[in-house]
Length: 75
Image (cartoon, rainbow, N blue to C red; front, top):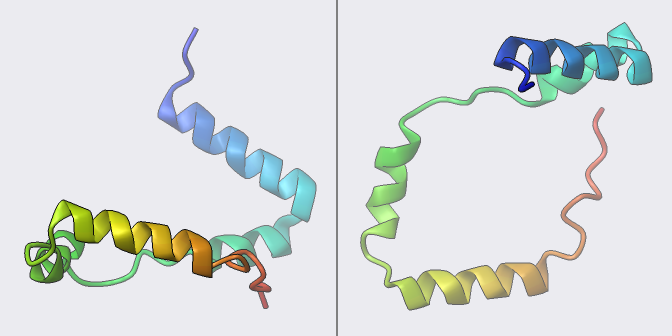
């Protein structure tokens, strides 16, 4: 049986709390803010000018250049 979205969210929160404790779970969640603006509109401002080849080339460069992408520490 598939879980509902609410059940998955509750299970996720429970896992975080069990692993990190309440205070660090709150710190973890606060790290991911919803942001501001219109993501789709802003993407079209630069993406409409790129070809698929340009995008694929940029993606390949990112994977080569960003070997330390997960080294950031949550403070």
